[in-house]
Image: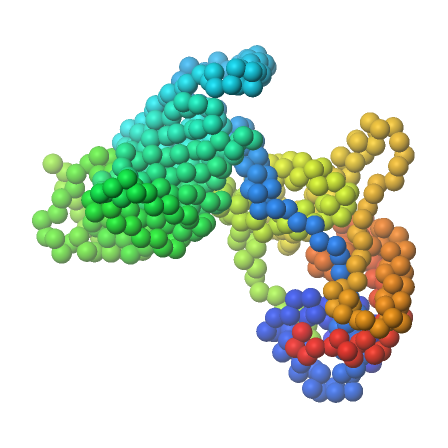
Length: 337
Length: 198
């Protein structure tokens, strides 16, 4: 232990532990230093001086704006997505591009140049584009949209992409998808429609939309989204915003909705092939089998539906294996018909 | 008064990131990007250059995550030193293009802390100005060392490693700066400014 009892103000100001206490006081170092000071009251003055010395060292502040921070993140993620996603690009005939990447790059560049010229000179002479894709039961799909947005489509889901004019990107989702929307220089809106009264509007951000049965759930991971909900009776529209970590649940039948905080990692766990189970019931598992594999599971004894477990398991895209995993987790047995 | 450290959640975050968790990656970004930007702008004074380097840094970080060390003591240190290398490289390239031998414009400008502005007394104001001048007169490399210790709270050892110098030199630099501050701050201000509990 350093010989603090002979320290001068300057010595204290040079001591790493002392500096840490001044710069980042916490319960522990507060306790340590205050106790020590009570035992060495003659050092009060030296310590006070040293505190001022440490505190008087300041630097000019430079900050990224929130927007710059989001944009930078989008660019980083964009680069990564471009590296990682020759998995499947949406126009399906892109197999050969890898082989002729320079040619591809040149063609894209030319197309972009022409496109830009087109838009700037002809204004509004924009070529409309519509694409659709779906993930069959028992599989997920990673997609790269023509605007560089990344989408992971969950099993049994359909997605339609349309760009009707230069300033609007729209998708229609049936099922569940995770989006990482690319923020364009022109601040082009990106809208997720749900075939119902709710739609999600963003500029560039990451979020999850689940649209199964009568329920829609929108969960925001990063950035911000704006939700449009049209009332059932009239044309009146409600607009809501979500903060990262918030989820909006919407009921299609009665148009009721609630906003709550949620654990985003759990919601998006499926994109990494994980099923996070928090008080997960047999009923939830049955719903899962139906959604992901389009398999019907029924129970005779309804009491069984309320069996519950917590934990996580990998999602295996094979109905039988998944069912066995559930059997083990719940300690039950499902018979095949 | 030995400082005890808990097994840091940093390690867990880092390992999740290395195993490909995007959330962990996003958290690392959110946690460090502001500090890195602050350092970068102080380092080269060019926000755009810094953003370019940060983009490259985080991109490479993700792409090479599997090859990164599994035992990482301090993510912040790792990122700061990586950014420093990239900035130096970029500035070097830049300089070659311009074919000039202009010095790299390090900033690390120390500013008097906000409390000092309360002082209305003319004599004290004059002293404050002297302090400011004295600190500004320190060589840039020394100011960088002070900055890394007091703004980013890197340990003396880490500052030394990052700037490729000896721990003793870091200690001496900071000792010198504290000496300057000590000389300039009259005892009266010290009493005036002290607020218990902080």
